[in-house]
Amino acid sequence: MSTVTTLAHDAPFAIRRTAITRGATYFVAWTVVAFATSELQYVAQPASNAQPYGRLLRMALASCWLWAAFTPAILAFARRIRIDRTNWPRTLPVHLAAAAAATFLDVWLMHAIMPFVSPDAPMNRVPIHIVFLRQLFLYSVCYFVIMALAHVRYYAGLSYERDLRAAQLEAQLSAARLTALQGQLRPHFLFNTLNMIAEQVYTDPAGADAMLTRLGVLLRSSFIETDRERVPLHRELELLESYVEIMRARFHGRLTFELDIDPATLDALVPRFMLQPLVENAIKHGVEPREEGGRVTVTARRQGDSLTLDVRDNGDGLAGAIREGTGVRNTRERLQHLYGIARQQFALAPAPGGGTVASLVIPFDTDDGPADSYTATAPGTASDTRGAMVPGRAPLPSSPDVPAMPGVGPALRRGVS
Picture 1 (cartoon, rainbow, N blue to C red):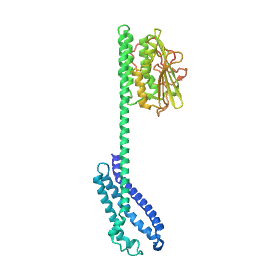
Picture 2 (cartoon, helix red, strand yellow):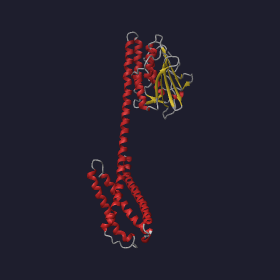
Picture 3 (cartoon, one colour):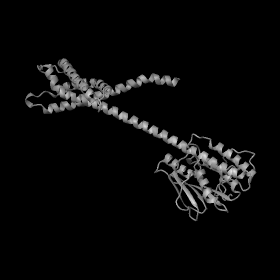
Picture 4 (cartoon, rainbow, N blue to C red):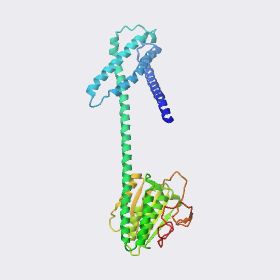
């Protein structure tokens, strides 16, 4: 309440300060015009009838300061009655009449104050209407210059507001598009996982039950911080580990999953749920078709200001033209919406030595909080892929009813199958 009261109390002072600033600007600008016209008149006047420079300057200052006083009214009048392509036959005569009125007012006031401005000047016997006609063109030009400035300011503000609204709409559209893309992942992943579980219900009820429990853990985790489009890499790896546990239960030792993560990248921000569809794609096309199974490796490296993430399998590789499914297409579109075309790269390519690698490069960015490191859900401490001990981090929520599955270990241990 006090903040609102303070703002309401300060508003009149801010308006007054703005008005004073604008008035001072008009005064200075017209003063400059007065000095310039005085110089021109003094140089251009004939030598036989030359007037002193001081008299010319006093007369020019008096007239220009009158126009400085007219300027706010002319600007307000020009904003109220604007000239455009549709109404100029109606509004142009109005402004011509206003220019004539301003000219007459200047001439009349100058005639009235001339004895005070320049008492040593000779008496001007020219009728006031003749002086008005002489000055009409010049002062009309001054009027329309002021009016043009008002129009420039109005249309510049209009253009700014239009650009601002367009930028806001584009941001809202982009956010809605990102939300829709992220929303596509959950049903896509959920349907695929439920189909896998349905296949296991009769042949391996215990494994199906464990997969359902892990699916619940993964879904609960995926709905945490849904307002954040980007999360630290260590949290993305936690989500990915729950998914890999499900896939290990399905493949009964045929899946080997490896993480090769540079600890310096664990706090880098990555799009939520970005790695899971790529790992799912690698398992589907690189591991599942092979009777002996296969290996999937996730690599994270920092290269200058960029973060490189690779998902590699040792399957049979790409055959023919690449046909992008929902996961790959969604990944590509999300990266383009988040980072634009130039600040990210995403590609599917044959991996050296066989298989396929999905590689993405994004700007390296981190949270403002202190640097932490990732630990798998196994109790105690875990080692990364190079054997360095990693400080403990709170594990993913899990259920005590999940039966132990042979061959399931910490996700960061190389060669777990």
